[in-house]
Amino acid sequence: MECKKCNKSIFAVVRKNDVVEYRIIDTNDRNGIGIQGWKGNWRTEEKKVMKILGIRCQNCDEWLVKSGDMPIDIDGGRRIESIDGNKGVKIISTGLEKFM
Image (cartoon, rainbow, N blue to C red; front, side, top):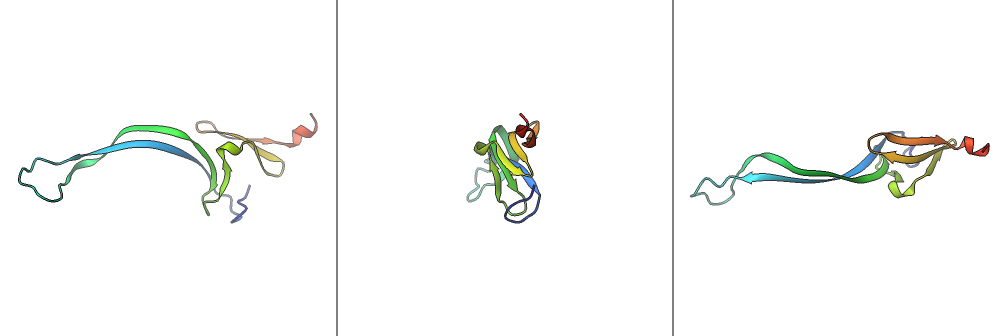
């Protein structure tokens, strides 16, 4: 399987996350005027995995498959049937369909 744009075969499944993070404002200095510094690093409050967006080429950022386009033929009688964020990409052979 190669990218049609750059002819490379480096692909990644892309998902969208919804993350809520916060930082504490240092307000202990009563005479402080101007920019007040932060206390500590960013902390994660909530993280939700929204959905799988599809498969894209990591070399040129060309989208090979979007999640709504399933199933899609890729090459040599193979087809991407589904994408599961935990299990992986389900690729099946279309050659068997001729005999059924």
